[in-house]
Length: 341
Image (cartoon, rainbow, N blue to C red; front, side, top):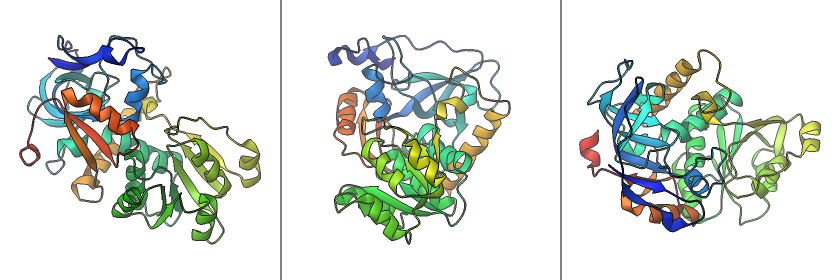
């Protein structure tokens, strides 16, 4: 099969598309023909050895895939060959085929196509776990979303709206603010226009945001701590700014703020410590809810660019330029969206 292969962290030219052996099928594995693979900021970190889940070369990047089941191991019971599915994998997704453990494979509703589907195993799942499970967002609460036009930000806007929240979206270009509006944000905050904390306080009558969804870190995190409401919950999703901030424990103390870390991989068994019993069923129920909301039109994943497998460098460059609205997709196998439903 063809796959993107990283053979060195130090030499970008050492990452290229190669012909390699397809991965072996495990007893609990599901072999997929990959029609769409997600590309993300995390891939940039992985390919330079800077991600917390460090993979040693040679390896194939990619953690979100959607396609058709080719074969199943003898212990697989939930899916069968020919099914349309989406899956999360620890690595190996940017290839023509991948083998995923059955526990991280989810059937697709007919109304959800492959490009939409790859938003769900990590991006929408993280938004849901953060806002519903960890922050326990209530109807009528105010959710502040930093980096609102990225894949994580748009997912957070839509999930927060499904949970009944009022959403304040922060972005830094007209196009990104317009994307946040299209996806349901109630208040748009242009970080070029003035201090973000004051804009949040103005939009909330001086109270601040009850929940903050922050995949950015750096200055965005510090601004959020200045305008979070008493008893607020601040979700640490990632550090796209490149700066890991300090917690600001003094503000957390005087405002009764809870700072919450969220690593989705823990729930799907990718952490060193396994999740508690019942987590797999909980994850499958969450993905079923999210994919159902998508099929109903309540979630509208946005793919801003599509590339063939050989275009992975252009895809990564687009992400590094900060020009992406939503997600970027690779198509290892050509497909027509209308035929994939």
